[in-house]
Image (cartoon, rainbow, N blue to C red; front, side, top):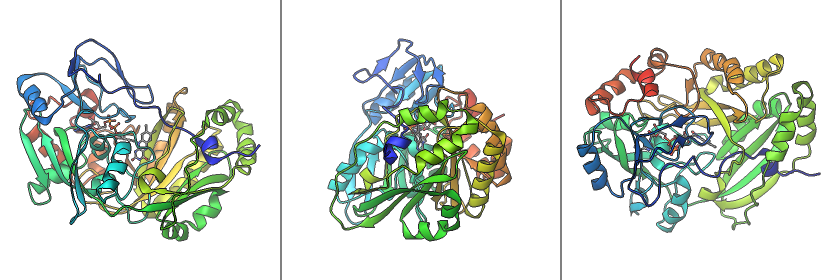
Length: 447
Ligand SMILES: Cc1cc2nc3c(=O)[nH]c(=O)nc-3n(C[C@H](O)[C@H](O)[C@H](O)COP(=O)(O)OP(=O)(O)OC[C@H]3O[C@@H](n4cnc5c(N)ncnc54)[C@H](O)[C@@H]3O)c2cc1C
């Protein structure tokens, strides 16, 4: 049986645990909220879904008590859970304006990444890069420093040129590099701790098509030629299988070739289940044998369609970014440690490159980094695997992804970010009543 890459690998989603109640501006029944992986649960007092910024301001001015904004609920860390008001921004969607001269576009904060590409292309623009999936909202994505892969390509926050932020007290701030630059630098990655973002201005580029290729290759072999391959392909990543010798390589480069029809999304859950149900000591041999049967794929698609995937299998994820030079060694140590421990793990790792930016809490603030992700199917407890791997990231100078599982608190994070205290000052200034602080954010910023 020949396996296609999509069939073999699948993960992601049908859509987040629903973030709101379409058609209702205010829902006060106690419907529990869950995140995408299903591991985070909350019982918000109500769900507020403003249709406009004015409606949001009125609510903020007239209400009291705790609040948390939610995007698509795709974060794995408990940034969103609240027993207070859950602010659902789905209705703040659409492209407000696009400037053909600067190639910048103002986009409402609740718009899903996957809904942006086509209308933006119609306005002569495309986002530089996209993450692995496109179900996140724009504000949710930039709030955790969400990124894709590619040498010289920044996280989404690195392309933000302006923001509209409404504070928890209902005051509107228009932020950019020239208007309150400190608050702007804090707000480009703010985990929803500074206020509610209603609009984001993105620096884009002209639309482009990507030739996408995927293939299976020996992991050590790819690592040895990584720099060359990453320079040759505009977006380059590998997904190394744990307990095995191979990686799935995913590469994209710009092309003027015409679009070649998209491959159908296939459900890989059967193959992942097969691997998952195989005893760990036999898993390597199974994966090595399956991997050699995976066909290479090739397609040509508009960038917004080429860069993202559909993930059907739910999982939890830990991701750290380490300084670029540390990447290969950190990856080798993870592979080796997991193999030696005979640890339960099914889904491959993900290894990507991200350029540096100047946001205060961006994982890549200060210089280029490599991100390494570790996944555990949501039907299993992720802790044994993540506990085994996390100390390796620390030894390589890793910074955790704000939306993905880690165990760090305020003291460790302060050591990782030169502007951590500056961020905290801005947070205290903009949210003096701590309406936006849930227990998890208190652990990150106060304890
Ligand atoms: C299957 C899957 C694949 C993923 N792939 C990638 C990837 O390739 N690269 C990557 O970097 N990450 C990836 N992630 C992580 C994901 O991109 C982040 O967790 C992102 O923050 C989720 O966006 P969201 O819209 O779901 O926001 P949520 O998870 O709902 O919220 C994230 C944060 O944003 C805040 N927020 C939301 N809206 C607003 C607003 N309007 N104003 C202020 N704050 C707001 C929330 O309060 C919270 O703090 C993936 C996650 C999943 C589940």
